[in-house]
Figure 1 (cartoon, rainbow, N blue to C red):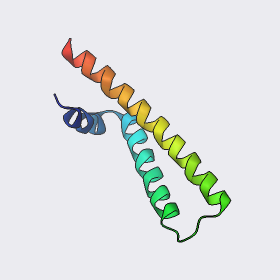
Figure 2 (tube, helix red, strand yellow; figure 1 turned 90 degrees about the horizontal axis):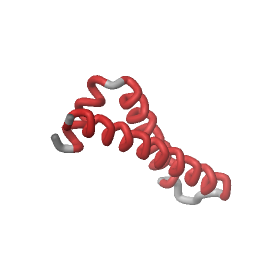
Figure 3 (cartoon, rainbow, N blue to C red; figure 1 turned 60 degrees about the horizontal axis):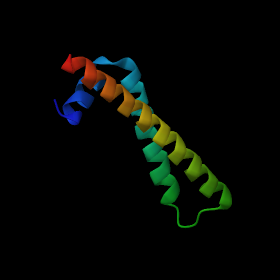
Figure 4 (cartoon, one colour; figure 1 turned 120 degrees about the horizontal axis):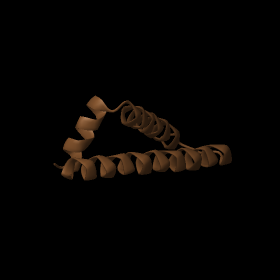
Length: 75
């Protein structure tokens, strides 16, 4: 099963994965809005960095869930 197929299945069946995915998408939207500004203040730069780090942590957790699911499905 491909990672995309696993992701779709987890989105449909796993509440925690869905929550992480939705939060990741929200971070992406916030980041796009922030970096789309013509000029970023130092506070904006700090906020963008914070969002990127949080987004990365969410992605790492989602990848961990995908790996666990894939390993269990292979058994």
